[in-house]
Image 1: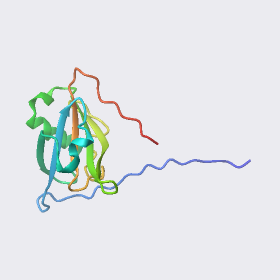
Image 2: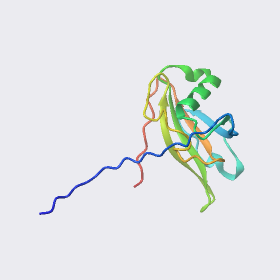
Image 3: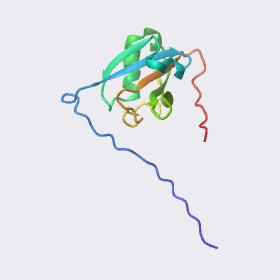
Image 4: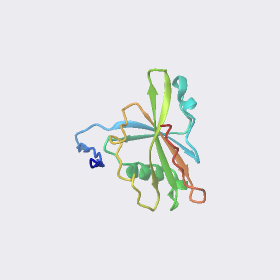
Length: 149
């Protein structure tokens, strides 16, 4: 009988370091809502949700850094235990619709596995939107949706 071996390969993408003094920042259009993500239909036909936050940043910005920027603007999110569930909203050119892909969760006052994930690692493209579901500490934290495959 032949021995069967399996190997687990962890894929780590190297983040290209950006010189923020010499590189022009990109405009990140962020849409926050409490307790849920915005519906993808709110991004259709050139429309966007009304509560837009514009952030100038770079592709090497981490989710923790973006959490801090949102907390600076929105005092209600500064409470310890507030969850930030990040998703990228991007156009699907095959069927002329937008799609949403969750990229990570951070929590105020706690270190998490997604804190150091960058926009580049999340495959963010310039022109995409960032949708953030903010869950206050007195509610249940966001649960990850099961993948369809």
